[in-house]
Length: 54
Image (tube, rainbow, N blue to C red; front, side, top):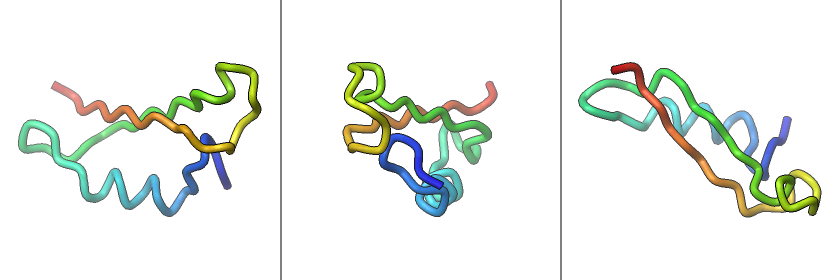
């Protein structure tokens, strides 16, 4: 499964390894910047945003 050039294994790796404010990330939003520009999904240029509960 691909979304924004990032596969599911990479997403899992990012979530498992990222710590924010001493806590493991509980949510991950992947924005496909190329899709927003109308260039199609999965062409790279992804922007990862991590968000943990406060």
